[in-house]
Image (tube, rainbow, N blue to C red; front, side):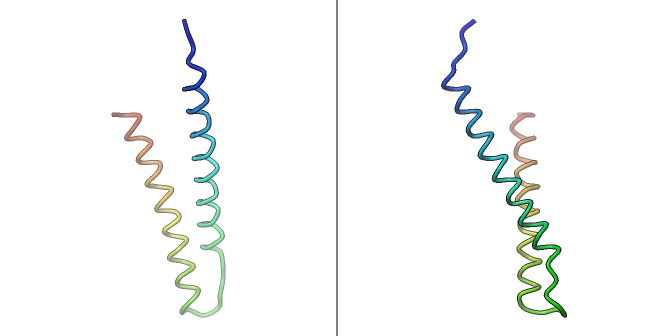
Length: 71
């Protein structure tokens, strides 16, 4: 049995970067959804839309990961 250490290192590196990135995007979503800018309008709406976009990106990454595993 021979282990391809270069491939293992690549998998580890990509997994680490993607995990930290996805956790960061999810954190931005949480912070954006909890930010209160007062009554309606402008920045509050953009912040909320940005938070939902972060959550959508996380959901898409999870669905893509499941797709790759199942394929």
